[in-house]
Length: 84
Image (cartoon, rainbow, N blue to C red):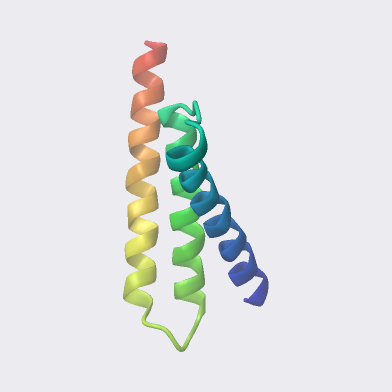
């Protein structure tokens, strides 16, 4: 449980650092798919942390997991449209 929390903190710091770097220092040329994949992993791991933690409300965790599944399906649809 503590390992998942540490991983989530690292992912949040990476996302925040990339966002601040993009806005204030230099624009980052990342594709939509790369940003979406990062958000999918971030939301899924945040959801898993909420669901596995017994002290927190798990409804928010399930919301994160559902959001990650929706983003994942949108990413797959976008990838298949580019292939076909």
